[in-house]
Amino acid sequence: MNPAELPLEVSVDDVSYLMGRPGVPVRLVDCREEDEWQICRIQGAELVPLSQFGELAPQRFQDTSQHVVIYCHHGMRSQRAALWLRQHGFHQAQSMRGGIDAWADLVEPEMARY
Image 1 (spheres, rainbow, N blue to C red):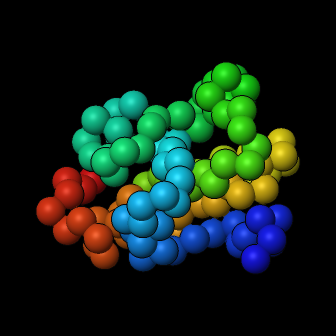
Image 2 (cartoon, rainbow, N blue to C red):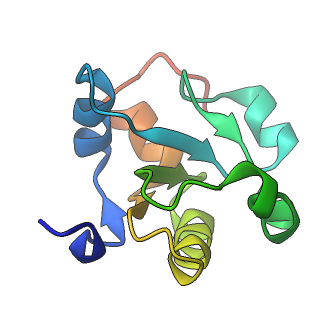
């Protein structure tokens, strides 16, 4: 599949699978706010809050060929962030459908919830 053809959304199961594959670099970005990040997060993720995305992105995102998966609580904010990245040349930016709430349901049931 051509990177430009990647769907905007990716399932929690697919993200879990991609993260477990050695040699397949996936950058996991949490676009929730700091207080949400303190409650729970996916191991290996980095925080880039949507409220500061436009101002932080030029320093934090530079390799447009990188596969970036963004998540939030339920998947709405991460869609906005992924679209923003795509509009700026990151054609492999995707939003994790269902967010960290779906991750807690399907992958990490012991995770704190809110």
